[in-house]
Image 1 (cartoon, rainbow, N blue to C red):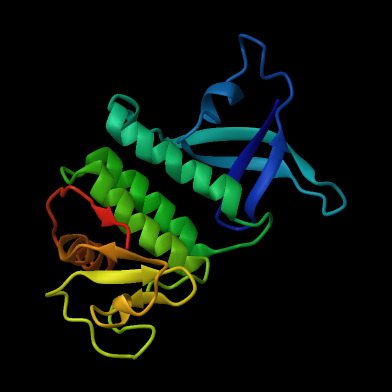
Image 2 (image 1 turned 180 degrees about the horizontal axis):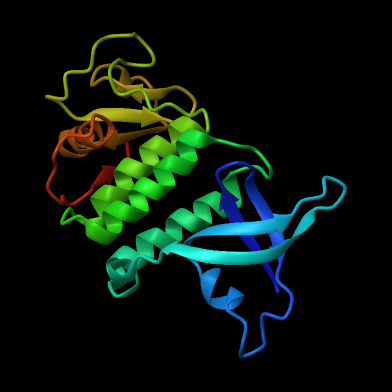
Length: 199
């Protein structure tokens, strides 16, 4: 069996588990998705898949696994790591961020979708895609958040005046803009109905 691990020291890597189908094997349970584990594996730079020797569970996040809503967002985080994070690239901030979001999904009373929204902004920043919410990408005017704003795929966020100039602009209601601002600046927010309007 081959599994993907996201590690503190080596980033994302693939490991092979031998004998995991045996009823006596504890490795299969330890490397269950969402488990935080310590591992021993034999690393050789000449091979893409490493051999996992042992694994012990540090945390298994039972509340996430018993809550469908939290589980949905936790698995989405694993999918982001699997699809978008390069192999063998250490990122201590991202590793700590993943630990933190799983802990919060398991213990916080804040809605899972809001926690995931906060993580998503952090994740994009770690990948080098900082979300600019303070100024208009076209005229550099400060965006107050009192009016609906626009988003253009080529330019970015547009103030209420510049959004009228470009035909291929999406309108973002001021409530959605405020919601994104709260997520980015880690302010307390309530669950809101998200709405994006075509131009």
